Amino acid sequence: MTTKRNKIIYWIVTGFLSIGMLAGGVQQMLQIGGYNEIIKQLGYPQYLLSILGVWKILGVIAILIPKSPLLKEWAYAGFFFVMSGASISHLAVGQPLTEAIPSLILLLVTILSWYFRPESRKITSLTK
Image 1 (cartoon, rainbow, N blue to C red):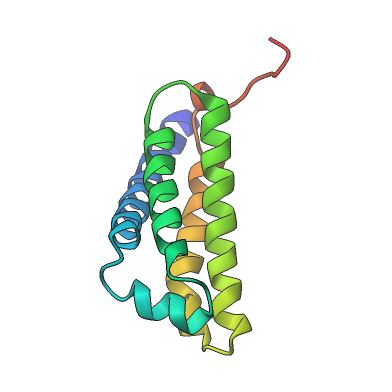
Image 2: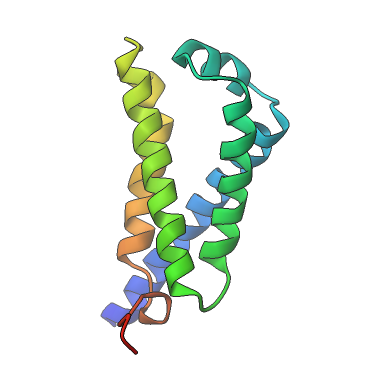
């Protein structure tokens, strides 16, 4: 029962993570929506949006495809760094915590998706 429960949790949080990262990635890649103003307020160059957007889209693909556990680890690590960096950036420039909440939610969902991933999506051994 625990395995089934974990699988359900995994797919729910991974679905939410994938939708969030894909939507944000497309908007960032195309530099549409409110991201231009956000990146300006945080003091980052505009071109960073396109780079982050492409990597988020590729990360979603990596997490959803079967096999390739090492690639999945890299994608999760990338999501972790981007979302923790976004959260810290909002706070570092003196914005209220409410501005960091979306990135904190995606950070939490990234951790949950990684934690509950099935054995087939984990690196079992690098020596095999």
